[in-house]
Each structure stands twice: as structure tokens, then as C-alpha cells.
Amino acid sequence: MFMDYRELAKIAVDKLKYSYVPYSRFHVAAALLTKENKVYFGVNIENAAYTPSNCAERTAFFKAVSEGEREFRAIAVAGCREEHLKTPAYLKECLEDFCPPCGVCRQVMREFCDPEEFDIILVRTPDDIKVMKLKELLPESFGPEYL
Ligand code: THU
View 1 (cartoon, rainbow, N blue to C red):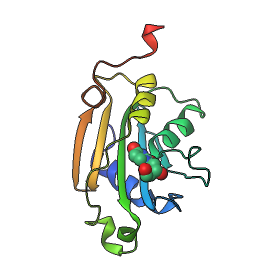
View 2 (cartoon, helix red, strand yellow):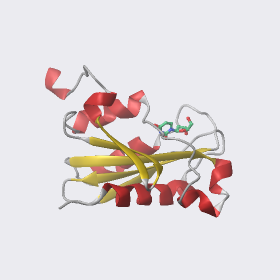
View 3 (cartoon, rainbow, N blue to C red):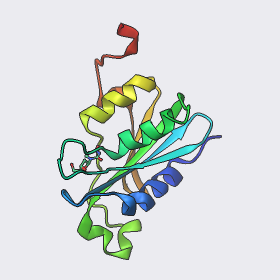
View 4 (tube, helix red, strand yellow):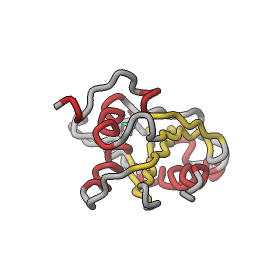
């Protein structure tokens, strides 16, 4: 049996504090689960020149792929504004809303994951999650098999 998605969601929420977001002050964290039940974390990392900034989901994917991973089951994504991180309650209840992955990150997922299988776990709180298939968030997509 693979890791419970609520557990994965909890890990993502716990990593929000590691985001480097001096410009947007919007924290995002991702927990990427491999088919062998290993978890890679990622946060968004911003830059004074803005465009070099990297999203949490891509940080997690690039960490995993650069460690030799190619098989993924799911990714949990949580996001919240900085003021919410300041209250200890955020771990339980203070994320305002689900934080869906941006289009670029969806395309990076498409490179490595089967759109009909890969689960994207949107996290509002560790107990309030919404699980969607990559195909739902990226229909009619272009992928490696076209080339
Ligand atoms: N961000 C992510 O890390 N993932 C997403 O899917 C949406 C946006 C980051 C990028 C930027 O650092 C901040 O959130 C505000 O856009």
C-alpha cells in the first residue's frame, strides 16, 4: 500500500516555511511521491530578477529527476500568503484555499507522468484535500510520445 494522501498533504504544509518568497510573500510547497513510496519536497524559490523564480512543484520534480527518479504516483501542493504562516494554527486550518499548479508545472508533470494515472492533491488543510488526475488539469496535452 502506498502512502496516505493526507499524510503527504501534511508534509507539504509543514514545508511551507522553507519557501524563499521575499517578493510575492506567497508560500508554496509540494511533496512528490514516487511509485516506490519515496517523497521529494519542493518549495518556490524567488529571485530579485523575477524570471529566474522557480515554482514548488518544479523544484520537487527537478530534485527527484536529478536523483534518478522517473516513476511518480502523486504530488501534494499547498500554498498560502505569508501572514497565515505567522499563526501557529496554519498547520491545521489557515490555508485560505486550494493552490492549483500553474500551467508550466502541469507541463513538467506531463513529461514524466501518465495523465490518466498521476494524482494531483490540492491541499487546503491536511484534512481538506481534493485529488485530481493530471488529465483533468491538463486536457488534450502535448507530451514526449509526439516526438
Ligand atoms: N507558485 C508556485 O510555486 N506554484 C504554483 O503552482 C503557483 C505559483 C509560486 C510562484 C511564485 O513564487 C509565487 O507562487 C507567486 O506566484
